[in-house]
Length: 240
Ligand SMILES: C[S@@+](CC[C@H](N)C(=O)[O-])C[C@H]1O[C@@H](n2cnc3c(N)ncnc32)[C@H](O)[C@@H]1O
Image (cartoon, rainbow, N blue to C red; front, side):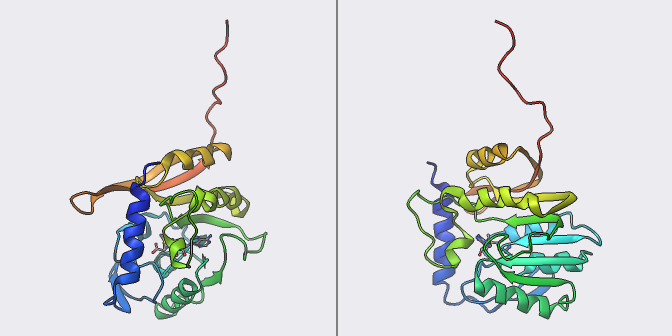
């Protein structure tokens, strides 16, 4: 297994754990935000800024943000015209952090925040025009266990959460609803392709950007759309 993603995830986790000087507030996208201990920081990597800027927020529609972290994308969605935003996270600290930033930016009338492992806290009837997750795309070794809530921000052992996201999201989309994933070139692209193909979805890159993060690391950040695969199925070649 290529462990570039794991190494990068591990370095980022350590930075979160060891940055004693981490401020309780940060600036991003021209706004000020609260940042709680144990929550993914949108200041160490460009993902939050890129995806929050690129997403095609449904004007007057509904948006589900999986894994909202500090809540930047959920707040930007509400400020960008979404009528109903649901933000969920498996981390209690992230839920608290998202609620604080929702309040700070005065969008509590159209954003609800839930503590949830993927879709589990949602009503089965809940449907959204756009479902999105800036996911924990670093794949750790097979026997790895996410020991703390913060580990979930980086690592998805065996890609089980990605598999559940793909399989369960479709039951929460409106008729024209779109399913998206914030991913990158250090994620396990082959495993994601196997998961989506099994679910009858094709993966389309909506936006991407390559950034050199240091002299050793260049990463392509990708906003992916997982669409129903309408391409003709390739069967075995006809004839003898
Ligand atoms: C890469 S961070 C992104 C955080 C935030 N959306 C941002 O862009 O700054 C991934 C987030 O997904 C959350 N997460 C991981 N596994 C989850 C799960 N099974 N259910 C809900 N949230 C999850 C993590 O706690 C983390 O906040």
